[in-house]
Image (tube, rainbow, N blue to C red; front, side, top):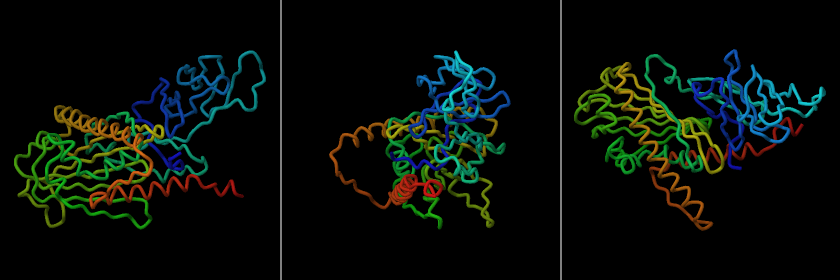
Length: 350
């Protein structure tokens, strides 16, 4: 397997989980999610211990799931509390439960070793729940390995060619980047600052800016799951104040949660939060439709690339250049995280 298991992953938006059973596969593990009557999110393995029937195809009864095949009933912790035809409940009649945390409009789940599930390790995307921002969001299924989406997002030069007419302009591909990795080797920063650029429709129609712009793209990637793009645009003739503030700038926080479904499929969660036109529904609709179009263009390209990679001869060597420094750093860190997940825990050793 190629997963870094001992990390938090986004399983859903909070709004997706209610009193209906929700099935979702995370890191190859079929899970079922629901809210208890008190509003708590519950995550259990989506497989009855009796004959493997999906619990997501069963029913809720209070805070318990009643298997739709033979009636085995499980509580929030995954313990079986009823077996049909007998009073004694077998000791092994339980399904795994998984730690979950709701934060910044996401539901995060921990698939790895339970005793290592530290909530403090969850990266933040506070704009998604900040009343000073308005957010549009969605999720698209990707029939490709998650590493391809990481590569895609770490190198935004593809906007010029794949997303022309929406978000890309010539300056994105032609402007050099800077890449840094923090001292703990946990966060990757990739920046591209364009002093004089064309304003793509994505920003021209949402902000009303006419003419050339100054444009910032500052990426902050927290492997393995969370990608943040701090985007800012301003009229080209408007400079920030001496204190660094920019009252005439428009800020957009683009968030991707990159969650592997299987080794060759991915949940592509995306969100766009803005600090302007907060109550303008037309702007929200435009940004939602435009960003979903961009995401679907990526999905089409990456689905195709997955098929190419799976059919190519063993040992094929790809070429990397300067624009790939962020993606290569991400590959290195992800490879290390996967290796760490394969190591036996200290508890197991002792």
